[in-house]
Image (cartoon, rainbow, N blue to C red; front, side, top):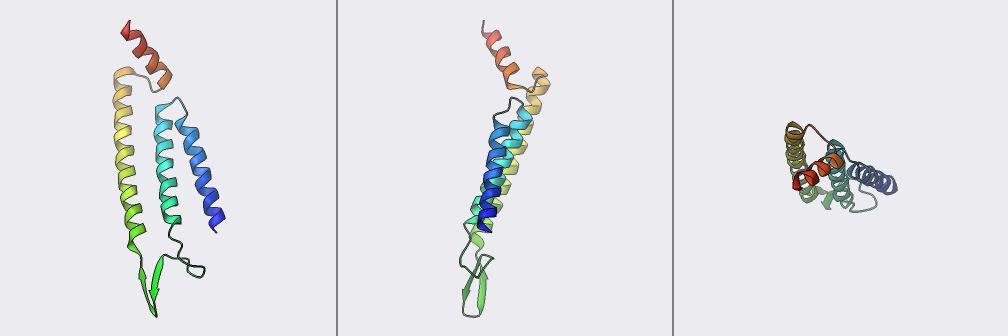
Length: 116
């Protein structure tokens, strides 16, 4: 199971890197969002406690308790990732409304020409 999870994380990082290296601003935002999901999976993969337990449970005798630390960290990361994605989408929308372009190359050429 761990090798499948590592392969999924590696695939998400590969796709996120591919999307970030694109020239389209929307694809860059999607790549950053995919990086966020890969980071959440990495944090959740750290919760493996023993060979016989598949859930993040801490047991003392017959009593079992859920370890809330990983869940709290991932929940916080999800909220931060959603806020960052929403903020970046607003920035791209505003950039599109002003310049009518969503590609980085065109935006760089426009900013280089305005300096002269």
